[in-house]
Length: 202
Image (cartoon, rainbow, N blue to C red; front, side, top):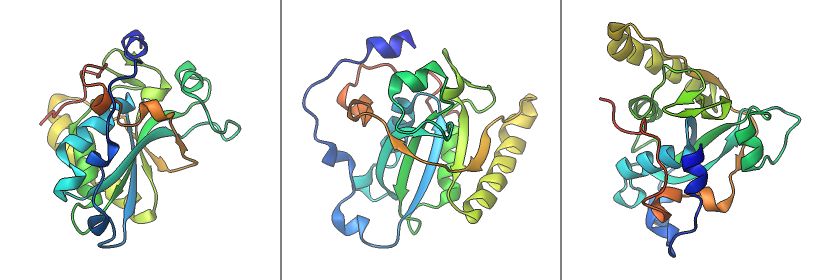
C-alpha cells in the first residue's frame, strides 16, 4: 500500500492510442466485456495488455480500470474510499474483447495464470477486500464458462499442491471508472509499483 502511494507521481506524456485497437479491428464484429479483479489494478491491466496488445490484433480492444462489487449505497467511489475497505469495492479491470479472436475461456485462464487466486483478500503485500480475486460475469454463459475453467485450473494447477482457489465468481454490478491517473498507469510510469504476484505462474 505504501509503495503504491509513493508511486502516484505523474510521468511523462503518454499516448494511450498506442494501447487501443484500430477502428477497423474494433468494428470487425460484435464485442463482449469481461471483468476481473486480481489485486492492484495497475498490474492486472499491465499484464493483460502486454500479452494481448490491441494493435497486434490478439482480441483485446480496450481496457479500463475501476471499481465494482461494492455496497449498493456507495456510488462513484473514490480511490481513497475504496482503499479504506469501507465500500467493499474491488479494484478491477474491464476488458472489451473480440470473441472471434480470443475466447472468454482463454481470458479466464489467463486471469488465473497471472495472480495468486488462493489467498483471501490478498495479493502479495497488498491486503484488503479491494485486492480480492474475483470474476464478475456479464451473462449466464460467462458464468458457466468461468465455473468450468475454474474447476479445470483447480484440478490441474492447485489440487496437486494442496491449495484451493478462493476466487469469487459473481454477477457483475455497477461499474465505476477509476480516476484518470490510474488508467494505463504502469505504461505511463514504468518504474511504478507493481505487485509481485502479477506475473505468469505457468
